[in-house]
Image (cartoon, rainbow, N blue to C red; front, side, top):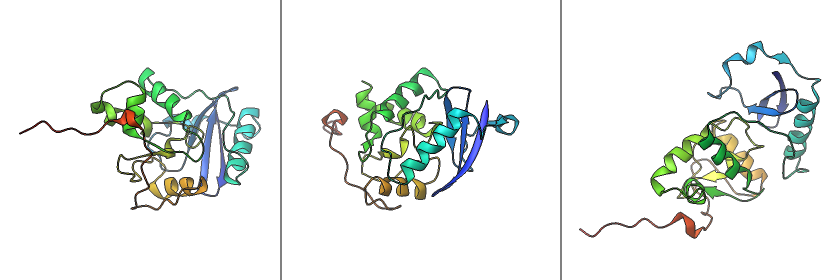
Length: 182
């Protein structure tokens, strides 16, 4: 495993990879940074990490809307399914935890589990978990911090501010909350 840290507009970004696949992209302080990162080899000259850095730089300068990197995030089958859903959220789009839950064919009660899986996404930005908002449009739960989530959404054309709500993207599959008669 290799690691390489570079400076981006939102602070340092730590990239982790095998010889052939990106396995992590983390901001300082994220709880999900692998414990063994200090024992990984410096990867500044590893081709996959050079390419990953080039694509992140292109993203931050507005020249890239979709990452084209071989990625191999480690996680459970459920987490993998959620992360695949994240990869389907296009640049400039947003979705909610409930909408992802519905797309997976799960009942609404699983939205928290989906949120937990989104929060454990090991490849920030390239697997765009920042594009997921709460059911009410609130910016919630970003491992890199809500100010970074808001900045990423602004980069993609949304007027996102911490503490404010964005319009919720419509998706009938999310369903409406129905109360049983008293």
